[in-house]
Image (tube, rainbow, N blue to C red; front, side, top):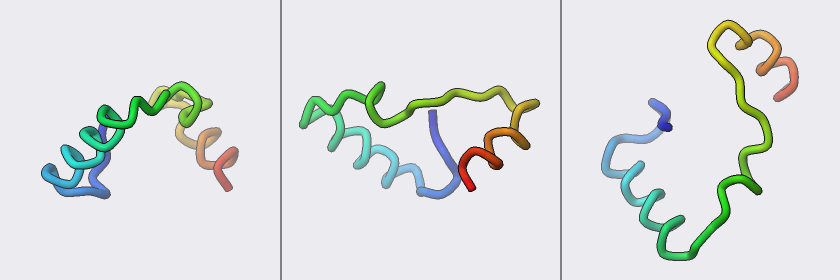
Length: 46
């Protein structure tokens, strides 16, 4: 998954950092939403 927050080479650097260190992304990303749930996702974030 990605975001328009980072440029493509920055996304690659982040992915490499995670891979090199064996970071468990399931411990970082605790929720998943579909686009139709955007309002609920933003409410949870804020």
